[in-house]
Length: 151
Image 1 (tube, rainbow, N blue to C red):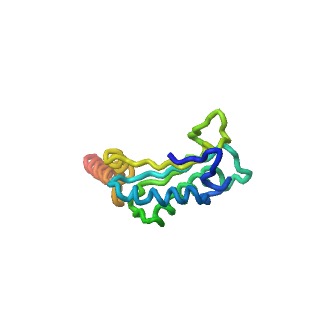
Image 2 (image 1 turned 60 degrees about the vertical axis):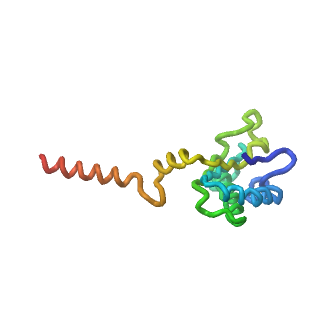
Image 3 (image 1 turned 90 degrees about the vertical axis):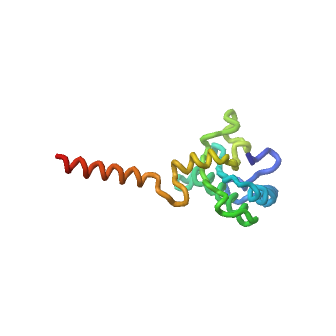
């Protein structure tokens, strides 16, 4: 878990621009993640401060922050295929629920997955571009054809 504290902000307020201290931290972490066989998930979070603009909101901001972290890690040498997923959580999982606008809620999380966790996610989303739903569709199509023949 990498998050803001009261002394250092990870991002400029309302922005996906990573502040220098945290950029350096991510650059230092890149070879560590590269040395692991495991995939990672990068998740962005925001505080509950609402945007005046409904087009760009905390969902967009949290996703942009996670993507910014991914870019820094990759620019620092971590291979692109190390990242299994980048996601946005907006203000849905506050660390400091009593203070929803607290800097402690503005964070990214980098989760290192076990092989088992990666395999489970691949079952849902497919591995290396394989379509998980397609075999089910083909099976249902065959069943429908067989059903029509027996009528």
